Image (cartoon, rainbow, N blue to C red; front, side, top):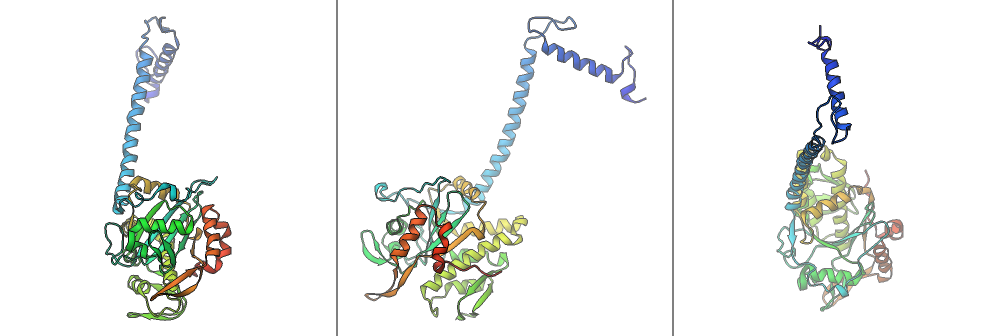
Length: 379
């Protein structure tokens, strides 16, 4: 005879006795605190409160455990990746608020705009300035307010612009004169676009992740040779060492600095595209290695804490390589200013570009700047 049908002293089964006890407990909780229980036993007015208190304590402990687990994971992620990113101090401290463009605001949300400085050397100072005091790449990266699109706009480093307090000069000379702060001031004056954050990218560091991703594809406009490699016109699949020579080429490019800009843009787009399209996200060890390498190659302003970076990264989860557009600011051509070879910007066309950026409307108007856009890499 099983337990459910086993009879006990009063003739009831275990199951019947259990149900009876449950009914008594239920009835006891329903009576008035001052009155007797159904079986005549004086009620304990504190009993329901004690049970409620025990329940709340149990839930509190569970919540604490979950908070520790989630918080610990959050701390781990922010410390491991966010903590791997160097900080550049006091980038915005000397900028007078009254002289800066107004922050961007849209109905869809608040856009975020970075000024990116790219260097092909790992030797940078604590101020995030490349050795020699000049930057190899200057880009504005805008994440739209609704976090569905991003635009990266390159400004040729030889662009002839006004540098506050220093007159007309090449834009990358702003680094030599005043570091990231003066470059931000120069770019804001040129574009009317407010810069929210600053980031210095070490291309040499990013190249190290290329082999982990199985290489990247770039489109070469015309056949060129640099060092031990020849890059033929068309699509080239580059490993890490080839990418190093590809990005480092300074001479033999028909388009000069414009070709260098395109190469930098192509490499960034292809590298992050490969990161998304490969099996990296399905391989925790491979993903961890790639993220550590990428974050080690980046420095940001000290206004971006580790938690801020992780929150920003989470907000950008809907952006894919297909929703990122690369442009070069419109130019009129090149010329000479004294002994310097410079790039003259097309301010009429550029003002339209900056206007769209200020109103967070460049994505739907991107076709207007098709000639300045980076072509997609064939797959």
